[in-house]
Figure 1 (cartoon, rainbow, N blue to C red):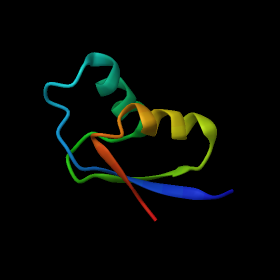
Figure 2: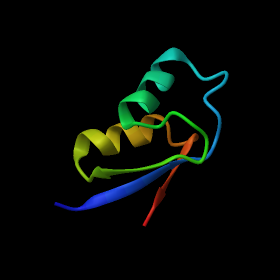
Figure 3: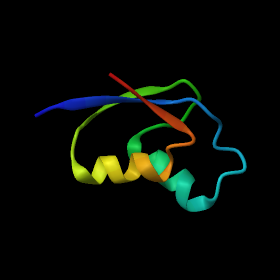
Length: 58
């Protein structure tokens, strides 16, 4: 299965609680943290929800 790397580029401070929980579900806890996840629809949906806080690394 294909994987994608997700990097948190902006702080979670001031973000709504649901967006902070989405970052937790992705495994992102600190700034500039990078995680590798499977590329599926549910992960893409989470990325779209917090797209202003994260970047996808190819």
